[in-house]
Length: 203
Image (cartoon, rainbow, N blue to C red; front, side, top):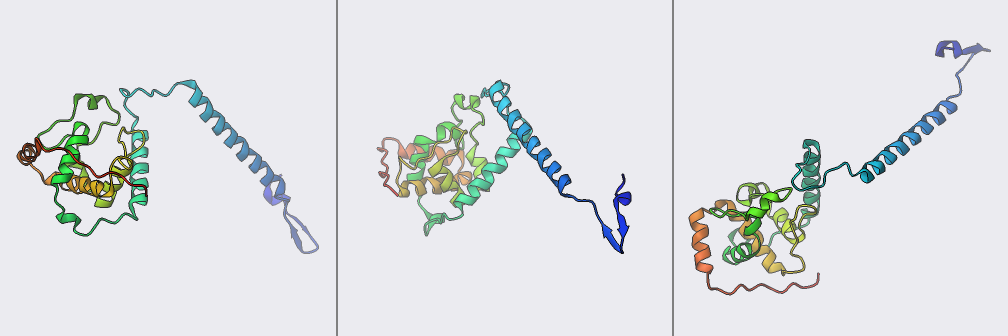
């Protein structure tokens, strides 16, 4: 019976068919679909089909989805981070020493290539001299402090105090402005100087 045929005229009133059974049917179908999706997801997890090898590149969609997730997650959490007064004029020498000690092996620097082993990481650590210009000081600081899951990027919250963290952030922020010659000069000047860092404190 069509919808039009289901309309009954009587006593000047229009009677429509009861829609409740239709809604119940649609709800049951939705629940069944959700169960199928969950079951398919669990089956995929246990199938071993997904290749977790670091040598296997991510699919384009997965890579794009993760990049969007990371960008928005960092932006949300860095929103409350405020750079200290005079951040743009901070001496970058202390931050350089920390960076050259802890970071250059993975991220490289002007005139300095990262370690060969980083080519086997997935994702490969970014060349900060080229990519960091897209990040605000607050985002740089947050990533340095907390790291990023599933990237090999550790956080230094437990190993460096706030002053050291901002010194590193200041150096990284200005890294794109350095030349290979300037980096070599800074490295030569730092040679023989003991590496000191502020002890972290509980926050």
